[in-house]
Image (cartoon, rainbow, N blue to C red):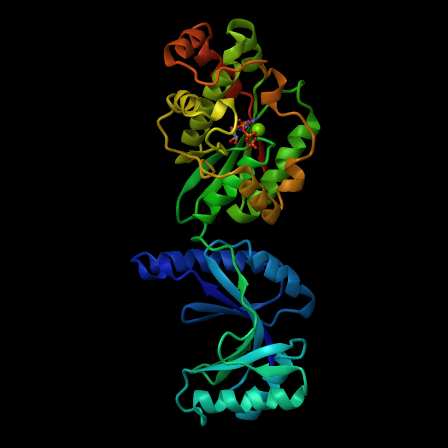
Length: 385
Ligand code: ATP
Ligand code: MG
């Protein structure tokens, strides 16, 4: 009897023509997630089975697998030789810490096995009842607990009860490479995670206003990138000095257009970096109507300076939904650390909510846009997160 973890793959992508490509990517990422731990990975039809890991690594392995996109569910359990008594002993052991209304469900792929599915389920169910008197009741319809017995063709049987939800989505790397505009806030890390879930590898771009924003604010963003890097299978963070641009806008443009102008610069610089380093899309954490810079007019203004597609996975999210995901993926506690973001440094009292394009262009014509972008691009710091 051996401890195992069954990994189930999201089924939808298994049906398409790209199935083998997807599976290869997924397998590589499972191996990468498991690489710090001793283990063996076995492929079994549309599942993977992790064996030969040490008990002490179990929680860490489950944690690592939950960060692999394309995994639908996980089941910790046991594998045992396909022998009636051994199966029954193992099933009794698997139910050791459980209680309540249960049923046994057997799936017999190996037709040479001496008992039929129903016969084996009945025998094992009876053995469980006698091993733990007054602990279990059999309930065939809507039980609280199902003990699954999976008799495979190779002479090995898998036994498990729990089904843990995986990350879902499709394997990372199957949807190209996006450049995430990563602030220190709650939203943009969640936006990055959502795109990883859809298979998009990330690079991050952060705009930093030293000395108005300090080292701690930068460290906070590096920490967020390190978290996202686990989902993205590695991530580069490009840190852009934004101070000169902000000072120029502050000096030459009407105050109410501060944020509108900043956003247009951020988008342009992000697109240039993406073009240079292999990115195919820009990702932001914008959510429609959340603040003045996220009205349809403001988004139109910032969107119009780039040609690349801009993905805004949170566009229709309520803040509370975003917070829930941020907590789940572990970015929330970092995001709420109270360091200033570059956007709060020159925050106008009354930002324009629905910027008119002619006005935006008129304000922008007061600036040496190309010169400012060149300068910023020449001072980039790259961090391997
Ligand atoms: P977040 O929580 O992601 O900061 P937010 O609700 O605070 O979002 P804004 O500050 O208006 O919204 O920013 C909108 C989006 O612009 C962010 O989600 C992010 O993608 C991008 N952005 C804002 N500030 C920066 C920055 N300093 N560096 C990189 N991207 C930024
Ligand atoms: Mg913000």
